[in-house]
Image 1 (cartoon, rainbow, N blue to C red):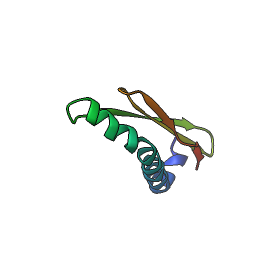
Image 2 (cartoon, one colour):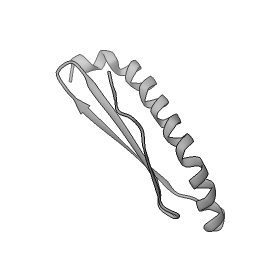
Image 3 (spheres, one colour):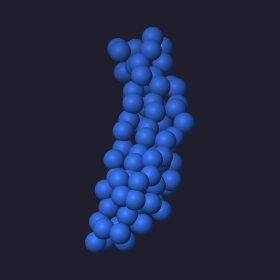
Image 4 (cartoon, rainbow, N blue to C red):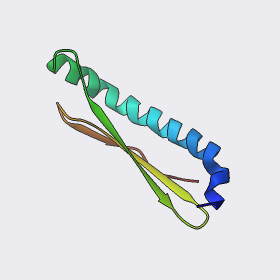
Length: 78
């Protein structure tokens, strides 16, 4: 874990990009969910960090509950 500390800036950039892609995929469903639910929508984002000896793999998944949609981004290894 100590070796990964120097990768934190890269990790933040990668996570930001993954979140942007994820949200881009979810926005149409978020709008639909808001229309169906008194102009309010809830989305959840899960971030999975896998730490290896010399790498960190980051996987994100997002979901809108009603109407249901799950979006997942490709994993990125740093």
